Amino acid sequence: MKTQPKTWLIAIAAFLSCAAAPTGLDSDQASYQERLPLTPVGEAPVQRVRLPLGVVMASKSDNLSDLRVFDGNGRVVPIARMPNLPSPSRSVYLSAMPIFGPQTALQQPDVTLKIESEGRVRTVTVDGKPVANDQTNGVIGVLFDALGQSGELQQLVLDATIPEGQPVTFTIEASEDLKSWRPLGEAVDYRPPGGAENDLALAVAGTLQGKTRLRVTWRSDGPLRAPVTVRQAMITASRATLEAGPMRSISAAPPPLLDAYSLEFALPFAAPIQTITVDAKGGEGLVPIQILGRNAVEEPWVSLGQGRSEANSSPIGLQQVPIRMLRIEADRRVGGFAATPAIRFGISVPEIAFVTSGKPPFTLAAGHPKAADVYLPLADIARGDPGSIPTANIEDAALNTLTLPAISPGNAPKQTTILWAVLLGVTALLAGIAWHLWSNRDKAVPSPD
Image 1 (cartoon, one colour):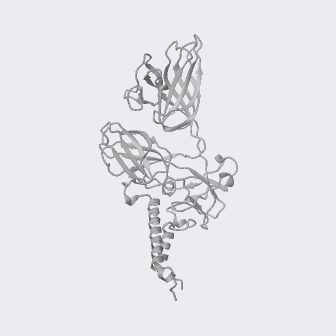
Image 2 (cartoon, rainbow, N blue to C red; image 1 turned 90 degrees about the vertical axis):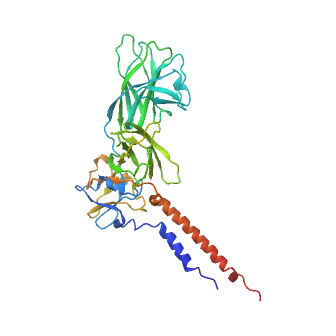
């Protein structure tokens, strides 16, 4: 007679099936962490809503895939992601910082730039040593600090003086680390003899990432008859991306410093961070810092951005990658932090569109660990200009200061915990099956007559 599996083997299998199961069905609005009443305005069949920051923070997914809108019968209504409508172009004036070095310095490999305290910029090699001087050492370009500016760059207007009667070619490049540069545009300017000085408007194409610096250099076919002088620039940019929406700020209280140069904490939310502001609270003055991130304690730290901490710091733009742990490192060439800094996050709050044909009242829900993405293309639920879709009403309450926990095994990302539980369970199940087969080996071999 065939031997039946042991009851405890069935129990292990049941545990494995439950380890990854959600706490409730994603069609049940009661199983969502955050639920807010959503009120349509007028009779429009499709309306849009700017997501409250609390909804974005409650989501268990970095792309808000666990978002739902329920009608009065508890049914899920169709939703779509709204494109971020272009905002008006804005112009910002930037002062020029002269770059000093040999004329051929920027043509050499492994050369980076270093900003000195007096606002000058000099060329250095990758190991930090100054580039050797030659006979033509002097101003070889200018640097513009566009930190805190983000969006699509459209135009750069230079307030510059160039030699008369000589074509001069200007090259514009961008970098986030002062070492790797990407081209944004190039243009030739010519000032006729006796002609008046005019601003040089350059068409450029590229993205300001919040921590971008712009480098402008110039050249001519022959020796310059007079020096080129660049005093300032006006940049014009417009946010016209589909991914990012307007940002909302939320304050956070981090755990104590690990030491004067390092601070680590876990993130209690899944939303991608657009910016981080680190305000020094111990009278440190200015502290250069680097922001690093990772998703699990087994992973190495990777750089997400860099900037500085002071009493009233500017936001630091971060690379847009899902991250669950952050580390703030102070430059060890300074004294570090005298006290735990204050943290502010900039979080993107996008819009969604939803169909209002169901029975009211409507409920916006978010925060389900296993809810699948149910967004439809906007064209499937709405026709015409997205900007003509009316806006529904929703409560957008202020949030309290977040408490950021220190990194420990107890607050490791849930995905890692579930994975280990499943792996351990599978190991136990296989060991149980092996033991079961071994203990019944004699029964499987027929005895000789």
